[in-house]
Amino acid sequence: MTAEPRLRSARSAPVQPGAPPDLGLLRLPGFWVVAVLLAVGAVRMSMIAGRYAAAYPIALLTATGLFALLAVPFWFVVSELDFLEREPLGLRVLAFGWGGLVATAVSIPASAALDDLIAKLGSPHLAADWGAALAGPTVEEIAKTLGVVAIVLVARAQVNSVLDGVVYGALVGLGFQIVEDVVYAMGAVALAGRGDHVEPVITTFLLRGLLSGLWSHTLFGALAGAGIGYLVVRCERTLRTRVGVAMLGVLGAWASHVLWNSPLLRDGLGNGAVALLAVLVLKGLPPLVLIWLLVRSAHDREADYYAEQLATLDDPELITPAEAEALKSGSRRASARSHARVRAGFRARAAVRRLQRAQARLAVELSRGTQDLGRWCREVRRQRRILNRLGHPEAIAPAGKGPWRRTASAVFSTALAVAVLWAAVSTLVGGG
Image 1: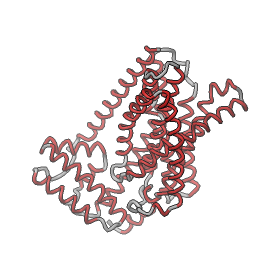
Image 2 (image 1 turned 180 degrees about the vertical axis):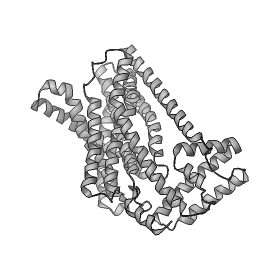
Image 3 (image 1 turned 135 degrees about the horizontal axis):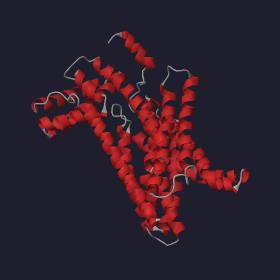
Image 4 (image 1 turned 90 degrees about the vertical axis):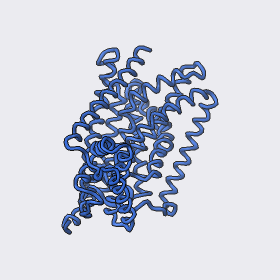
């Protein structure tokens, strides 16, 4: 590598190399502000949970368990978005906690107050039709976006790509989504007036979990987080441009939320499971496609950057050109692990996974210019020796299998999602 690409990457690269996790957070005033807000939110939500626990203990336990299980695949997928430079666990938990405690505690009373204001300034009819579409998104998207801003304030060095903003925003949205869904489920139990029964909880889980979960708050938070990530990272752009993109990200989250909550298409496609499924797709698919394109673009740019860092090593024992190409794509990484299992067994598959993790960490440390390179070089070499002993010296994806695997995975995932949605919609429609 010449000096010229190095100068380019220092200013215009999609990644602004950050420092390792800072252990001096306790000295930052912003950390204590965030900690206090989290504590206040925890107290507020604990009071709400305590009231429900006293009246409907079985329903509350069921709702908490169901939505906690729903959070697991979302958490896993969001955390895996940034394989090459994974966000620290503590900050991921902080993002989730902000959404579940702070944003939720603020939004419950504030949304109700704004809904009342719409009724007074407009009309009760307007509030009945559009209150949920205007009040909820306005309060909730601001509260959730402030969670990503809080992470920037307490750990700026850990937000060094647009993809980081997407991950933190999505986790804030996930925390909000899970806690809000539990509150809605308990509200449905109270509204049913049949005591401590779980049927309203199951219905709410199907409606707000399986049907709305795919394109709900996690998605909205990711859109806003992408805007904040752009504002923080893309230093080669003018401040006006970066602020404009950040505002577009938040506005996109708000508009997607408004569309989802709006009465549009409520009666326009008829009755039955097909009509309801069509409405869900028409309202939810546009922001889902948008965030998929954003994530894909940000991931590819970041992967190219880290591959350039690894190329400076010029050492095939640390990484070969074919391994660097495989490392850039989630489907090719998976294909390389599968290829190792077929050729040399499960031990080789595990060694390839550890090798990929070590190579990714080595790329991050190279970009930071830290003194910890030796540790990760030794780890890469150690996994290489294991693979050599197993007769599979290179962690590569077989030629021609990456695109097919990606296509097959997309088709299977789409078919599975449609099947789950269809089952849930049919259950709700049939039960109604």
